[in-house]
Amino acid sequence: MPEPTSTAIATLAVPALVVPVVTVAGVSLGLRADVLLAGFCGAVAAMALLNTVPGSSDTLRELVRTTFHRMAVAAASAAFAGYATPLLSLINGVPDALLLSVAFLAGAGAMQLLPWLIDRFKGGRGAARGDA
Image (tube, rainbow, N blue to C red):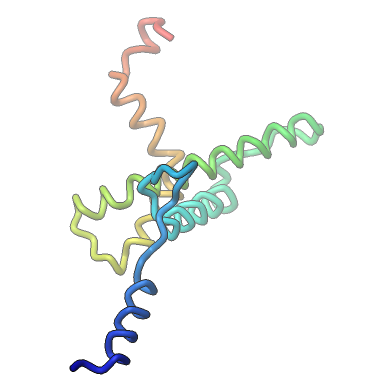
């Protein structure tokens, strides 16, 4: 007969290793919360250090517009990092220990990488032909 304490320890240890997945309205988005947080921190660091969303003037209207623009950039960068980091780690064979570092870099570079990806998948000829 096995000892009851050995199964209790295994039962308590397993839930501590599970990373929570983000759900909205009961639908799992497949995003890990720790990767999203690392991507968000990377976006904030890029805005602070690289000035990826510069301000233009000191009027209240411009400050509100810039604030909402920065919040949208941070949310888009975190979402990009959340979805791209597992893909990048599978393609490049990045170990799990570096997953959050890759998420931070993906969040920091998302606003430089996303316009390039959009232009590449659009064909790069849409603006030249006059198509909107």
